Length: 101
Image (cartoon, rainbow, N blue to C red; front, top):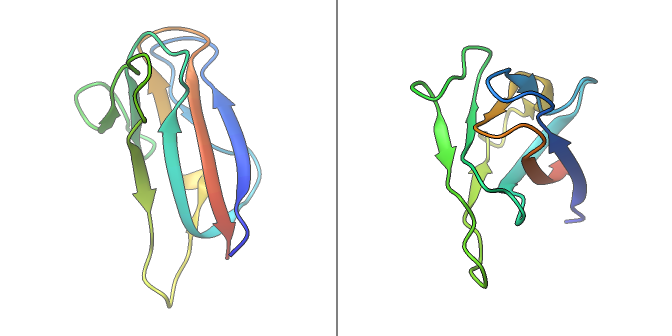
């Protein structure tokens, strides 16, 4: 299983953005807040907001950051264009390690 890295940054806080602008079907993905973030990251579908989401917290110095695992059933895949993020702070984001479908 070879993983590919995609880095995603939210330009303007409060504005949801797709993880990928182009189609990227994945067998599984791990989404982790960037270690330099100072605010929270919100993950969801096209309605993601601070009140409707999965949340990745603010990284703490020296800690291993938790990651959100996206793993559809073996018969299907998920597309990174269907996953959106938003952030509390402009210019912050996530790293996504994924296995192409």
